[in-house]
Image (tube, rainbow, N blue to C red; front, top):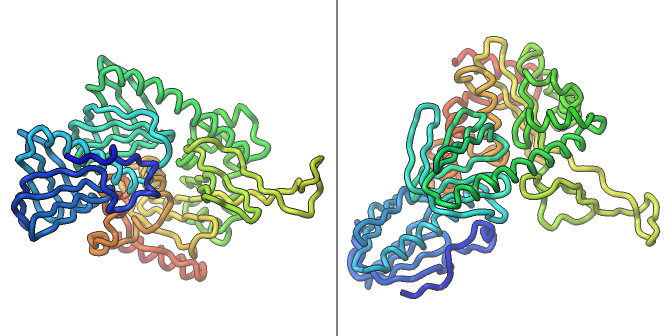
Length: 447
C-alpha cells in the first residue's frame, strides 16, 4: 500500500484537485464496467480503479454508499456496484481513506468551511418529521454547524443558528432544531463530553456575534433588546412575525432595510399581499469576499469567526495622526429576504435581495402545514443553499445531469431544500405591479 497523505480537510476545498491522490492500493475489482486485478487510487474528488485494459473514475458526487465487511470494500454509485477484495488488512485502510475523502467532498457541496474543531467516530439516529434513520457516522464540529457524516447519502449539516435544544443523556447527546428535526449522537466515548462542551462554547459565541450584528443593523438598538433578538433571530434565520412586537427596534430596522434595498419597489406589494400579518423578514451580513480591495468594506460571515467590519480607507475625508485617511466606505448592504403568506395561508411569496445580485423576482410556494413552521423551513433552505437560487430552480432533469452533481448532492442531504422544490409553483415578475399580481393570481388558481 502506498499512502501519500491523510484525508483532505474540508478547509482545503479550494486547493483540492480531482486527480490529487490521497492514497493508493492494489486489489481485485469486480463491477459492471471492469473486472480483474486493479490499482485503486483514492483522490480528492473521485475514486479511480484501473485494471490492465479498463479504467473507472467514480465521482464522490455520484456515490450512494461505501461499505466494509469481511475485508471487502463495496462502493455503489451511478456506475453500479464495485467490490474490491484480496486486500487483507489493507481493505480497512482503503475504507477509512475513501470514507474520509467522501466526507470532505460532501462537506464541500454542503458549503462547510473553516477549521474543524472536533472530529470523532460515532453513531447517530435522526427523526425528521417521522422519518427515522441512522447508523455509524463521523461527527465533525465547525464554528457554525455540526456535521453528521455516514458513508451514504444521509449526511446532514446542522446549522447552529437553528439549534433550539441540546439534551445530554446517558452516553448520548440529543440535538433539536427549531425546524422540528431531532438528532441523537452516541458511541463517541470521551469525545461526547468534548462535543457537548465545545458546542456550548460555540453557541455562546454565536449569540454574542448575533447581538453585535443586530446592533450594527439597528444603530439605536438597546442592549437588552439585542440580547433578546439574538435568541429570536439568530444569524441565518428571519425574525418570525409573532416575535416582532418583542423587538420593535430591530423589526423597524429590518423593514427599513427591505424598503431601502433591492426589493424597495415590491416590499409594499408583499405587505399588501400578506394583509399586514404573517410577514417574515430576515437579514444577515453579506458574505465576505476573499481578498476584497479597492476600498470595499466587507462583513465577514459571523459564523466563521468575528463580525467586525473590515474597514478600508479611502481618501478625501480627513487624516489620522499617522497621516492616513480616516474615511471608510459605507457598509455593504446585507442579504435581505422576505416571506409573505396570503390571507388564507395557501401561498407564500418569497423574495431575496443579494448585494449586486441578479434581477429580482418573487418566488411562489404552496404552503405545507402551519405558516410559522413553513416559514422556518424557508429560512433553513435558504441558509443551506447559501442564499443561491439555483438549487431551488433547477428542474429534476437538469439536477440529474453531471454538470449539476454538486447541487444534486446538496438537495439530497438537505430535506428543507427538497420541501421547497416540491412546493414551488412559479415566479412573479417585477416588470409592473399588474404583472406581479397577475402571476400571483395564476399561482393561487393552480393550487
